[in-house]
Length: 276
Length: 311
Image (cartoon, rainbow over all chains, first blue to last red):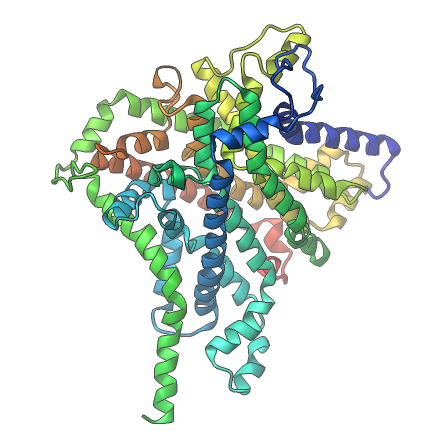
């Protein structure tokens, strides 16, 4: 187990490369399609993997006809708002559930557990009617509100705070720090890992969401990227190059963000390995 | 006001101030809508009219609605066919990237790409690849096999959507397994190796029992997710559910019936309740199985704070 034979190593890398082709290959194929010019046949058999004369023309054209950059900006607004509200709301609620003693704590905890058990898909129509009654339909606020504080994030934060040793706050209590000061200065800095996980999942969840924006948004000016791409797909099905350019625009910022953050993301897993 | 009293009122109020944003959101947008759904399911409410009480009529109508049975079949099939792959393949993938060998960090991140990309993007990519003239068919032709109309046939389309779901989830569940594998004591593998157990034997005798509760968790998460499938099928099949609507799923049906100016909110709420009930049953079944397996090696390790991983 410790000493891998060269044979074993070779098999491992062959498998890794095969899975790489399967997981990343489709994205590269899409990138390649998006760079092929209109004069190049994209249906050749055998397929040609590199564009003969790479061009940015499709990107200019897709942005000309459909405001993909505006859609991306809308998605960015929604995702950023979702990250902020979740970080603030979930950490505060999680802190209260884990660290404060008060009447009704169990009931409050149960409310979050119950909320986790209710699938969003099964309340989506009721949320839609509600937003209509509030006259918020077709706004980005309506896209953000239902997920502003995810119940699962609250439970994650509760677990993180509960795992902190009592002594972390003891000194602050003796120094006369109030609840808010203890929360901001002592507890929050100790749960950075979980905060990062909540931030990443909130961002990806909001950026990725399809069903809810599809239901609540009807005005193309307000579309988020997922809904805009769905629209793009209906409009330009005849030219895969344009659709490809649109998808590359949608996926590139996320891949860049993930590449920058992946060290923090995988750290939790690595930490487990060290501790275990 | 005396000092003591001020402290006491402060203490009593502050937890609720901390809870307010979270509890408010959850109450307003999860729990309250659930209660209204529960009520509307027994009314003939439409988008613009509150409707009146009709008892079980929506549910009786559902039983006679052919589309409902098609949707229930598709969502059910989705669970049965997708879950075994999402439980097993990501585990094998995690074993592949677990070992610290040069370049493995790159592979881990790369395998996560489909998770990062939004579902619309991956659906558009696969639609182009599975097109009659797309990459998959081009490869099939080179290999001498005829071309296959993946998106034109009711069943092939559903299977394609399932493959897309499995593919997109690989990286996500791989991470969950990686965290679990990190807790498997290395000595177990070494002892088994010394005893002459080959890789396959070590997998079934050491790895699987050690990550069994994680497999159950992945099974729970992925079966609930598979039952609620919407985006993948909607995007590959289109809003009306592919050829003759035969690829509609339950959530697609509730979205289609409940939205729009003349949406049948009451009828759609009845479907919502069925989705909720099945999801809950799936979750409880798996949780019960988990409790039965509770005496697994994960707990036997002892001493280690199970929450430590998250801090």
